[in-house]
Length: 254
Length: 298
Image (tube, rainbow over all chains, first blue to last red; front, side, top):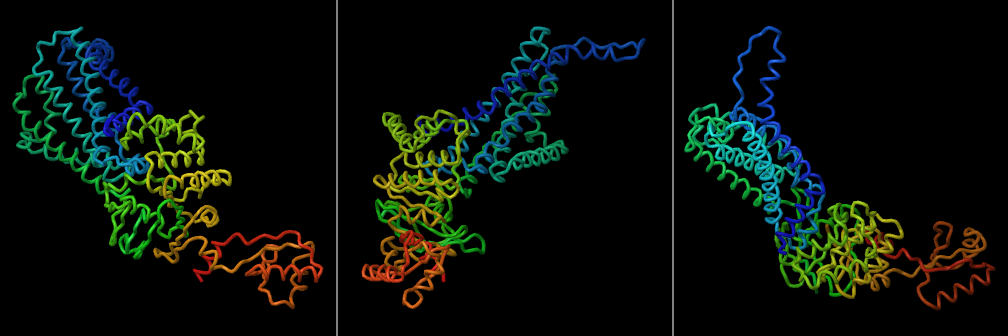
């Protein structure tokens, strides 16, 4: 086994022993079930809460309602939980000093960053696939999904945006070497992206479009080609932050 | 020489922590690096490991120059930090296996080397996770990981400072045993520890090496002193010996007497008999290094 895979195995063991795997599976499975369930039950709940005698003409829920729940819950609640779970990957090791022994044994600093990135990316993939396919399966059971446009592309957009935010968190966490550093940087980047989004022309390249435009992709209001540039910008920014993390960690005093 | 430190200076902002430090460490020796807390010992060790960049000067280890960040010289070093931190969910064996993978130790060698080291440090019977370890056990595991790749140089930063007497004795005996395989460079502010096992000693004070020598040479620098206790009170003994020209002081209820050679010692014994002083105990003054340090700092 090479040092890279050896350290990746350590990251995996750590995540399992600290219940991250269990939490990810539980939280994102529940989130997956919640999407079609909320869509199905909302009209019933609304009827029950209306004053007696109120005539309410609610359309029957469709697959679109279930997926709109997905694009509301997953990028908000799901992404927040994920970032919180993995926001201290680097600072914890820097603060405790657990890396010092291994680095003096010849472990490459880039190995530390890339294995942590890969571990986070694998967990994000697991979280995404669980929620996506549970939502997909239940929605397919209740409704006809043929009315939806670009279902997988819309999912891919949210997935890439989540990966970008995780990379930014990793950079902030490495740079500030504190638990809140990563979260603060992520928050600041998000605020900047939202400010940029005020200008309509920025939608052509703003990575935030991957998030805000995903429901439009489903309804057909947003064409798939409109996501091309934001997608490339997101990937490019992700790489810049990843290389930046490696470069900063190479110079970090431990 | 396994280590050569040449005119090393290290500055943190305006504070100069190391000032033109020059030091060489001979092969297969135990080199004690003493100094008060904050003297710069850990900083020098981190510079030797490439964990801190030098402001000026150079360091070579086993002929390899040390560079900041990724340094090839670390292949020759085993390092035990002052407070070694491990992954708490691993057992000692699992942690050493991770270290073996990182050092690229051949698979065929791993199991036997890990077994050998766990026996050396007395952890072979322990299968619990590291989170259940005492400070002493962690320190012993720290030595095991540091010796894993048969380093030419073992660097230990204050390995005994927070241990109880039993733990300290265990660590010192492990370091002594390691001398047959490697050169040991260990820092401490507990002078008796250095005195107990070191061949050479250097002292760092305010970022400067204020002395460096073999322990035996240091012993010669200090005039021989003996500690006496008597059946009579120490004051009584001193007054009965007052007419003699011996350098005597009272310390903790004992009489400390400077006796430079064998004939002087015999003469002193005769004087005691003549003055009806009955010896209860007599032993050499063991706090030698402490004395040297105090004299140097004067």
